[in-house]
Length: 456
Image (tube, rainbow, N blue to C red; front, side):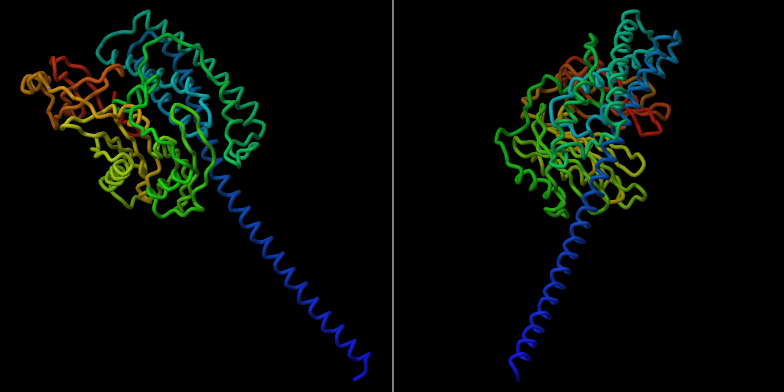
C-alpha cells in the first residue's frame, strides 16, 4: 500500500470520528436543551399555580374589604334594628374572610399586623353588636359614633388597597415572580403592602375567628421552645407531616420576621395540591399551612379527617387534643382542636385544621393560638355546684353535652366554665356558666349559612 493511500485512510478514519463526535455533542446539546425546557416549564407551571393562589387571595381581600365598607355605610343609614343586625352579621363574615385572605399572602416582614388586627377587631366588634341586637336591645349613640369611626378607617383601608392594586397588580405586578421572589424574597411585596393601613380607632378590642379564638396581639408567646433550628430541620418536620413528599417537592422560599419568626416553604403534594407552610425558627414547629385541594369527590369521612388532624397536632406538640368543633363545607372538613388538662377543655390553646376530603391531606393548619397561650396551668377547681349550674339552663333547652372548659370570655380573661351544648327549636346553642360564681358568661348560637355553621 502506498504512502498516499495510507494517509487517505487515516484521514477518512479521523473524519469518521469527527462526525461521530459531532453527532454525540449535538445529541447531548439537544438532550440538555430538552431537560432545561422541561425543568423551566415545570417551574413555570408551579409558579403559575402559586401565583394564582396568591392573586386569588389578594382579589378576595379587596372584595371583602369593599363589601364591609359598603355595609358599614348601610348600618349608619339604617334606623331598623333587624336590618342593622343583618348588615353587621355580613360585615363580620367579610372581616373573617379578609383576615383569612391576609393569612394566605406571602408576607416576609412584620408589615401588616396592624391591618390584620384592625380587620379582626372590626369583625369582633360587629359580632358583639349582633349579639346585643339579638337580645332585643338597640344600638346606642356612642356605638353608632364608634361605627362611624370604623367606617372612616375602613374607607381609608379600601382606598389604600385600591391604590396598591392600581400601582402593581393593575400594571402586571406578579407577586411570586417579582424581583427576587424566585429566591424566596417577598420583602418587596411586603414593603409595598405595608402602606395599606387603617387609621387608629378607639373601640373595644374583640377578635372573633370561630369559637373562642383568643386575641393574640400583645401577648407573650408561651408555648414555643427556645432553641433555634436550621432550615434543614424545618424541612424535616414537613417530611414527617407529609411522608409522601420528597426533598425536591419542598422548596424553601423566604423567612418571616414577625411575632413568630418562621422559615417559609412551598410544597408540591403530587395530588395537584400546592401548600404554603411556615415552620417556626424556635423549636421547628409547624405554625401555618395553607393551600387548596381537589374537592370534586369525598373519599374519606369526617371522622377520618378529625383523626388525621388530631394525629398531626399531637405529633407536633406532644399534647393530646379533642375535637371541639367541626364542620364540612364543600369538599373540606374544618376542625377545631383543643387540649384537655384535668378533664378541662382549654379553649385558649386551639389548633385549627382543614382537611381535603378527596385526597385526605391536611391543606390548612393554624397553631398560633396554641403556641401563644399553651403552658402547664394550675387550674382552679369548680366551686359552684354542678347541679346548681344545670338548674340555670332555661326551660326548653335540651342539654346534649356538658363539660368543664377554660374559656377566653370577652377575649380578656380565661374563665373556668361549665359548657353546655343545647338544642331548642331545632337550633343548637352553647351556654357557658361560670364554675366559681354561677354567672352566665356567654351564649352562642349556631347559625347555618351557605358557607357552613357559624357561632354567634
